[in-house]
Amino acid sequence: MRDILRMHNIYTSYVFLVDGIGRIRWAGSGEGSDDEVQSMIQMAKQLTQPVADRPKARQKPLTGPRVGKKVPKKKHNIGA
Image (cartoon, rainbow, N blue to C red; front, side, top):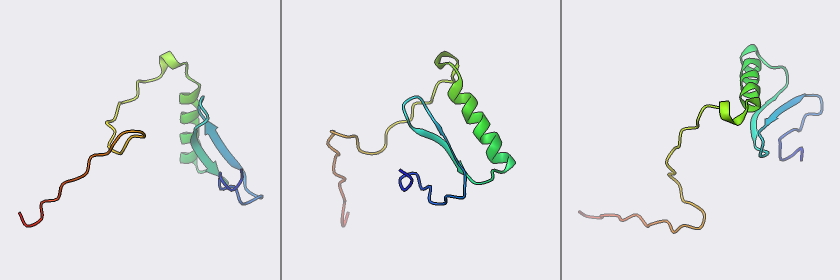
């Protein structure tokens, strides 16, 4: 597990904020700067808000291939 999370230094502290479905939403290690600490606090507050109070996430269009979907081939006009 330490390799996957890149926690190789046993003399360093590591902090991970994980959301309700197990995704790492914020990660830090070592002594944090004031900006990093504020960023962590903001994320912790965001993750602990009730779902109804959270701001709606913007829906971004998917630009990459989707699992199980056929990706159309690009046509190249050579010599046109």
